Image (cartoon, rainbow, N blue to C red; front, side, top):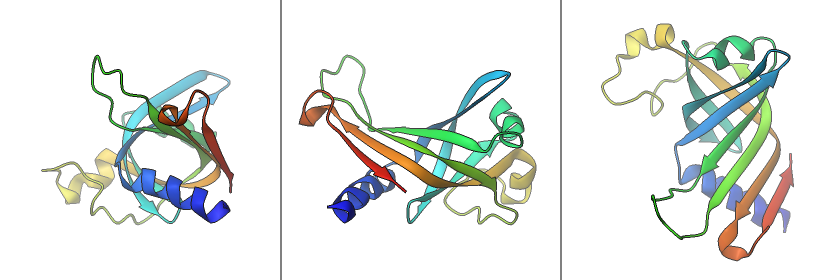
Length: 140
């Protein structure tokens, strides 16, 4: 059963490429949209260096990434999202392929972006199509 849950969560991550990375601390809470790449259940997240999140990650590596399945405005379709709690650490020599936005210059990437690898602690997949409060949890 655990492998089924793990694969369902991995499939959700693979089906998307953008999430919201958030962090909190004594000074407040911060969040930014990030592109990500999946490696097992780890995420390599592309964080803009101008985002407050990039600065605060140095002090508090505990993060949450929320990956929402596409939702259309005015849609009555049930929501589905993954809450990914984990620990982020900077990637010193990132592989930029598949992370940069179209047209981004790879030679400037390190000046514009920080790549952090997020290792999971707990993942919750919430799928309203399976009923109210339907949630699967994986503690990593």
